[in-house]
Length: 277
Image 1 (cartoon, rainbow, N blue to C red):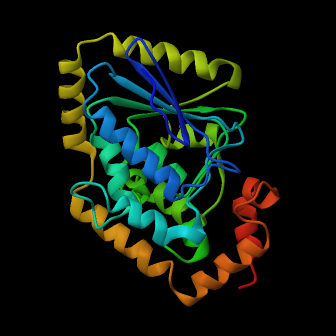
Image 2: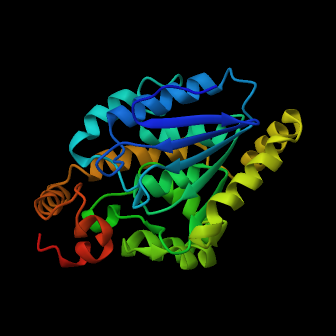
């Protein structure tokens, strides 16, 4: 079975759904991708054939670089469609990924910053290309707060000091350092990444679904943040991104080439350090 979406290409094989983001020019998280992701999750709720979902990207330079900063209101409106939504937030959508019955694996090649990193963190496991993957939480460098889970996940995974470093520096981190910090499960050579993830996904998909679901639920009970904390982060993002200086810095980034296939998006951490506003 396959699902037909404009921004997500899917293929089902042996209980594993391979879902690749394909939203040119650089896989921004905007209203179309949010809409398709919600539709995919709705369908998977009723799909007993799928035990594992592997999220990857059709664009090897960009996994999910960040949200479409020019369309925050639009993708937030789409997120509000989620039943029991967390204030209509992207954080609520990503929480749903963490809680879905299927096991989720992020296969990361290229850039995963901001909400792209938060998407990967919402998945059950993360494996990244040693040569290509880049991670970053860019919000503090703009003047905002990560609003879709980074604060909660990174503090639990990395510990207080490293979470402070990652969030407050808004810098870029390669896959090897991300692995050392606990941001991802493993950094794997590019040539070995897809075969490794595929083999792991097929292995897990063969196991009884009842056991997978029960084990995932119990690990979530121990490790996921309370919903109240997700709501707080979502509200803080919406508040801080509207602050005058955050708006000025965002405008400067857009003028310098943010959201285009240029140098700024590949070296975002360095670009934040050069802003004048």
